[in-house]
Image (tube, rainbow, N blue to C red; front, side):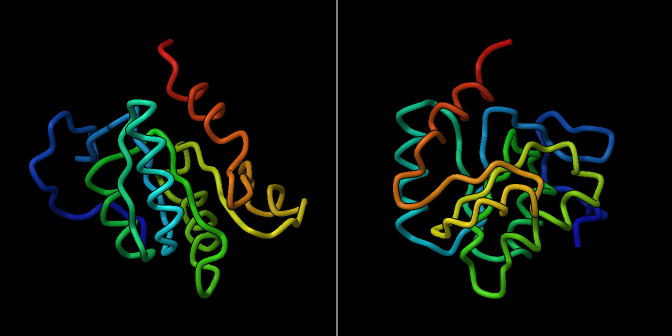
Amino acid sequence: MLSPPSTTTEPRTPTPGGTVVVSASILALTDDPALKDLLLEMALADGFGVRCATTEAEAASLLHRERPGLLLADLDMAGRAGAKFLRTLRQSLYRGIPCAAVTASNDATLSIAIDAPVFYKPDLEGLDAALARLFAPR
């Protein structure tokens, strides 16, 4: 599912595989409208971009066009789509993209199971600070 497409759509600064790298952006995989709104609000306040996908296929398509600085997956999606996508990503050529997850679950082992930090809904405490560190000028 995450192999590069055979054609690309007008990349601005392509990598050898044709993907555009947009380091100060987030690709969010969620079907939760409240989470989408919160992420968009954070993006406007903090000056980074957010693209939202509601399915694994849509996320893969967006990922092929623009490589984000962070992939944020919702673990509460139907069929565990967020967790499945993270596991697939970890085994693909996109494995170097930093990942994080959000969930309403209070299962402390989730972070280990998906090999990514987990932020808890509804407040996502700590996500702002993590994004600031990730997108800070180097």
